[in-house]
Length: 79
Image 1: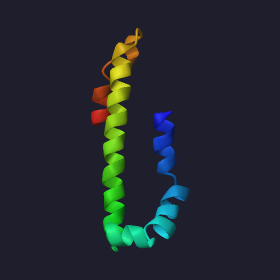
Image 2 (image 1 turned 180 degrees about the vertical axis):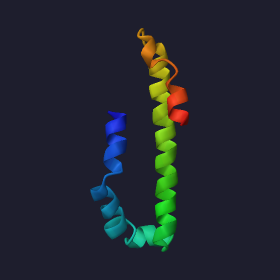
Image 3 (image 1 turned 60 degrees about the vertical axis):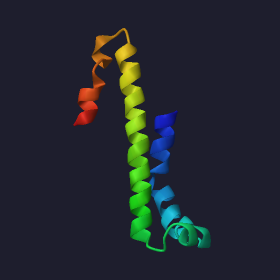
Image 4 (image 1 turned 90 degrees about the horizontal axis):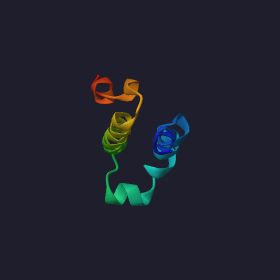
């Protein structure tokens, strides 16, 4: 469920909504920045952090599986 939610936040539709609505809102521009590129960098850094947490959870569950093909997924995600 967490992976699906993460992928949904990265959809073209949601990115377009960020650029056209959220980033142009008075609150975002007053509290964070008026520079859209800076706002995109902040969002990208946040999504990378979420992805790192998610992959850590996938690795942990994979290592607990009885089927050994799911062990050591951390090597796969490091690539």
